[in-house]
Length: 98
Length: 299
Image 1: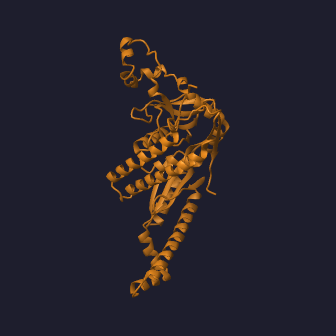
Image 2: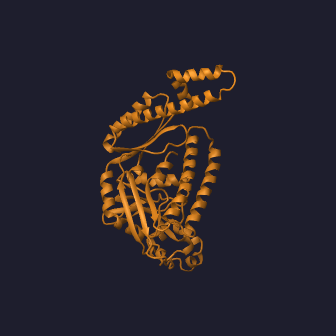
Image 3: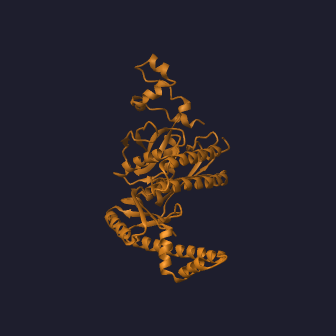
């Protein structure tokens, strides 16, 4: 159960040059929903929330995340395609916190 | 532009049991007419396929990891290569996966299987590319950087450590030690009339003492573990009981030492709750940023 937060932190981040700002705003909403989901998972783990309550909350949060995503991507599936566009990839090792 | 078309379904896929599912839907008539011949059409556009990417590894051989992919009908996990690096992927419908526990576990199950034999650069959950060509382009564009990070991550594992406390218990402990706080509390319980001001003062003092103690604990714990780890990162704590939400990068041959240190800390602080997980792929120690520059306003 504790794995979700790791998965959401790591890996790939997309920046589309023209829509970056708008995407970032949406990302903030998405981030807070994800934090809410993580907090709920933590409460289940600590025995402060029942599995049933969690499932209900999870369903609600996932639905809201889907709404944000749909609004963001319109008809697009969210899949990455370079289709003729230039691409710039940054891969960096991140060591200790500053 | 027809990126989806590039990814013509392979015959290999048609031999798999999953082909039954594909044939049962729109292609049913065609399949009945010519059962022995390979199905001539590409898959219907409504079921267009993408590639779900789990991680990047170094390998010169094409690999298969078995039918353990994400989705309700687990697809074959295989590699898409460029020179000596490869993405570990499985075919998927072009859709965004919800971060349900089932899906997240599926993602992690694949990375765990790959990690047994390879150093991985993990992708975040629900990273889907339209075609193999797009993935090759990703690997090609950042070939040097991927190679470099793969070397840095070689024989290193990530461990997660979350530390929680019960604020009520800690406050009681602090009261035992801090005279000001104790006096303030007595004042509140004996005072007649309004205690508003005293309670405000008490609340503020409690907050700052909790903050101070939490910082001190975090420093002690991270310091202790830094002697047996390569690097550490702290993330935002989740909920109001968490004081530390950290990830540590540990050399494989120091794993036992790291383990012993965590156990030592766990016994040293009996009132804290430790959630210790791993080994993980180094999610917290690799940053991949992808910037697409649209060629024109073609969409």
